[in-house]
Image (cartoon, rainbow, N blue to C red; front, side, top):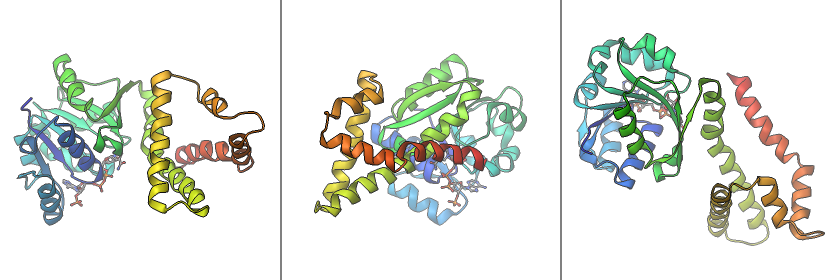
Length: 263
Ligand SMILES: NC(=O)c1ccc[n+]([C@@H]2O[C@H](COP(=O)([O-])OP(=O)(O)OC[C@H]3O[C@@H](n4cnc5c(N)ncnc54)[C@H](OP(=O)(O)O)[C@@H]3O)[C@@H](O)[C@H]2O)c1
C-alpha cells in the first residue's frame, strides 16, 4: 500500500480525509502530496501532519501522485482541472466537490480518465465518516477495490444511484452541524441544572455515539428505541412530549427541506 495520494486543495475536507488516513494508518505522511492556493497556510497544515511533499501547483500534485483527490470548492473544479487534464489522464481521480457529478466530470476530464465522485463528511477525520460514492464511475475493478480498501478506514462506504446521491449527501454533510446543535442544546439543559460544561459535552457526545452504535448494530427502528426508554407516566416520556410541543422532529425535517430549497 505504497500508493501516492495527492490532494488538490487542502482545506477542511481534504484535511479531514488526510487525518483519517494518517490516524488509521491507511497511509503514512510520506505518501501524501498536497497543494493549495496560499503556500504559507499550506506549509503549516502540512507540517502539523508530518507531510513533506508540499507541491507548488495542482499540476505537480497530479504528476507526483497515483490517486488524485480533488478538494477545491465546486466552482473552481473546471478552472483548476482543465489545464492539467493530460496529467490526470492516467491517474485515479477522486472528487469530493459537492454537486459535480460523474457526467459533469466526463465533460471536464479527457475521455478515458478514470474518475469517481464521492461525498465524504468531516467525521472521516476520526474514521467515523460516511463516504457516499456515486454508482456511476470509470475506475477499473482493481482501482475501485483499492479505493474501497483505503476509504473504508475513514468510515462507512455507501454506493448510491445518482437520484439519491444529493439528498444523502445533505443528510451526511449537513447532519454533523445539526447534531452538534443538538449536543450543545442537550448540554445547555444539563448545565442549567448544575452539570459542569465539559462533563455535559462529553456525556452528550457519548450518549449520541452509543445510541447511534446501538441502532447500527441492531437495525432497530428509532421509534422502538425511543419507546424502550419511555416507561408509562415516566420521566423520559415527559421530555419526549416537550420535544413534540417544541416541534423538534418537524424542525429537523424542515432543516433538510431548507437545504433543498437553497440549491
Ligand atoms: N467541508 C465539508 O464538510 C465538505 C463535505 C463534503 C464535500 N466537501 C467538498 O470539499 C471541497 C472543499 O471544501 P472545503 O470545505 O474543504 O473548502 P475549503 O476549506 O475552502 O478548502 C478549499 C481548498 O482549495 C484550495 N484552493 C483554492 N484555489 C486553489 C487552486 N487554484 N489550486 C489548488 N488549491 C486551491 C484552498 O486553498 P487556500 O486554503 O490556500 O485558499 C483550500 O485549501 C468542496 O468542493 C466541497 O464541496 C466539503
